[in-house]
Length: 130
Image (cartoon, rainbow, N blue to C red; front, side, top):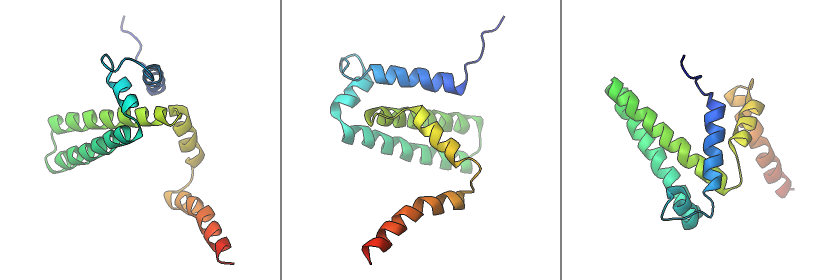
């Protein structure tokens, strides 16, 4: 009998718990503990690096479609998600926070959601000009 396939939520919650457990951990034994120790700039730099590598892998996959390029792209997305989760933990956020925001946006068109985000900024700016 095969083992049940874990859900996306299960995997993300387990990973978030592991990342959280690495805060204050031994830097010689944990890459994540080392990132936390280095601080905000190092963590955000890794997110940026992984985002760039993801874009480059996506371009490769677009111009040279193949199973190998697709696999490489999935690996880069995994690296980006992982490092984004480290950044989220650094800022005391969780996957549940992001899922709640996505749920809030569900059913809105991208243009509607963008307009809603810009409205408070526009109101604040207009209030300053009065």
